[in-house]
Length: 563
Image (cartoon, rainbow, N blue to C red; front, side):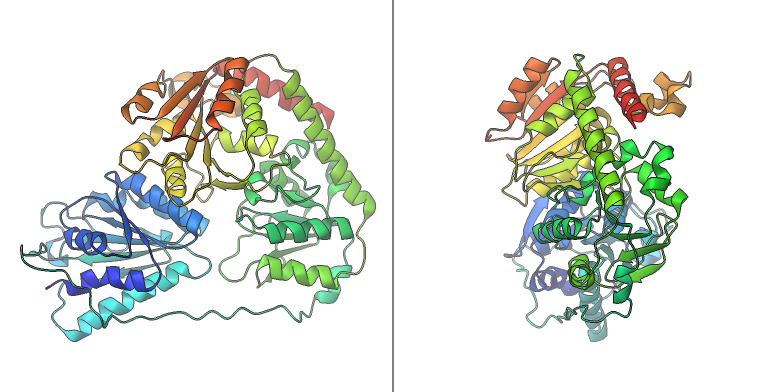
């Protein structure tokens, strides 16, 4: 076949351990479609909407931690991959993005589905590669095999992320009726050998004992039983507070600080809570008030633990980058720290946290008005253990972060916090659900839900997906934020006044559906949604935006006064 190096992309992917590919229908990408869909060791999913498909692939890679292939035709199709590619880049999720293209000489010549695709994703991929348009010379074949290997290797290396292969193709690119597609036996395979090192010696080890007020802060990270246990031991043994947003996946750490975003609104306690040293790892944190606190108090030292890659100075206090993985570092720390930290410092963080958690839950329990804040607490309280929890952006992830996971075992939390957009939340959860037997819960607001409704537009909807939709019929977050809530344009231009429900969508895609607007119905529905199902389940919780704002302001106001 004239396009044999294009066919061989699938073979190289398979030999390097890639098992899943998302294919968007098209014509220019026909050789890629045939190569991947006919490969016996690659599972392919045909998803028509490129934006949704890319997030479905992202969800798969997020769960499996292995590269997933995205394939689309030429033209604007590639641009529709961009939101998911950007999310993958900042969230360190491995994707191999393959875009079919027209030959270079036809760009700008008014030929159909032809745009400038080279480096189309700019700095939002780890590296971009371009195939040649002709494969007649042996060197061209070698080049194609080499850059395919390189793209996969770079995507897989820490920090993982998306890479891009742009593949121009000339016609004809459909095989003849009697032509058999064969994968080359002699494809070039280049593997990367990673040697794990141990932090056996560190010149600054003695400095572990120089600080009496230490905070350990986990950014967004994958769930790890081993790290949770180790941090619990360090916290108890050395009186060190462990700060955890919900996306840090530290909910099993004993006495973790989880309500910092609430009690750090009170600046009068800043001096008492000021650390000498903060040790951070992972990616972003949700808590805005934690960021403001640390930027203002300016700790003496800030050590960030990360094996390789760029390190952000989020708190404007970075003084040292420790190049190893978190478990390795904290194991070394636990063995080399000999002094107990400041007991009063530890106790103050614990007191502020426990009092705030108690006040928050007591006030929500006592509230009699049906609001999304209280409904969210009911959902979080009823969540089973050992499930995957996906949180959409905007208010969903914020409510979850305030309420927290109370003694839930084995729950892993996911959220698209690389770019923190509302796009792709449904699709990401669907992709993740397609790769696991665990139940996958998605907690999502109406704007994010309806924005990504094309995530349902395919034939692979997983029965283990359980969506809890909080519908306040418009962007309710803008009522909570002081700036837009005071503007006369609030309803028309900040919120999106919409009267949709998910009922017709559920009927359209044969999904199980329940709706509720009372506590009794909600409690009944939460029991039902936790049961096994033969199709995805949508539970829609409808609330009044004015009541939501009132209850939210009352609870947050009480917490502010309390502290």
